[in-house]
Length: 212
Image 1 (cartoon, helix red, strand yellow):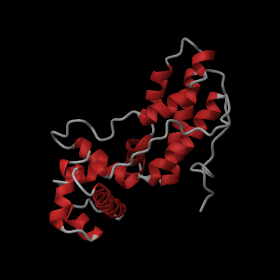
Image 2 (tube, helix red, strand yellow; image 1 turned 180 degrees about the vertical axis):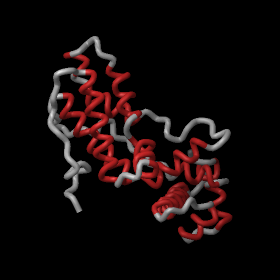
Image 3 (cartoon, one colour; image 1 turned 30 degrees about the vertical axis):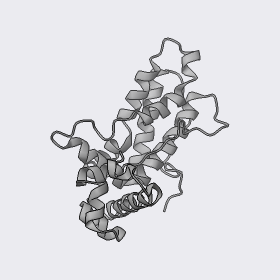
């Protein structure tokens, strides 16, 4: 959220300075560092005094580094009508995004868990909306089904929270974690739609890439 300093004069230059700080923060997060404002300023080649005009504390800085993905849908234009195939496509894209933005998402999750954090940084519902979009045909074919509830259930078994548990606690590789999350999504859909076998998922290509 822009601070008042950014709203007055030389707006383009200030926008570039702010973006430079955010980009530096994201680079440091990718290196395993939770940067302070001073560290981000140094990495961006910006004075500490200037950096504090944009981000008064570490929390606002890390919050700004949270990914902003405005896509209303993760489905391609020629998406199939089969909800299982649509869900597979969305989960493939969603897990890719989770891996791509893992450092920033981890930082946002840490912020959300801090005492007095207020509005959780991860609360936004974008992923639930993407999953609902995948399941949209069910509203016509299964009008009695709580599609929103199913989307929430699938989201609860996927995303950064699940990735962290599966890799940090369960000790899975990221490829294994991605496969597990996609299988969980498939299983929840299958439980809601008995008799829909779908196609088997395998570790190879589970994240859209061949085995290393």
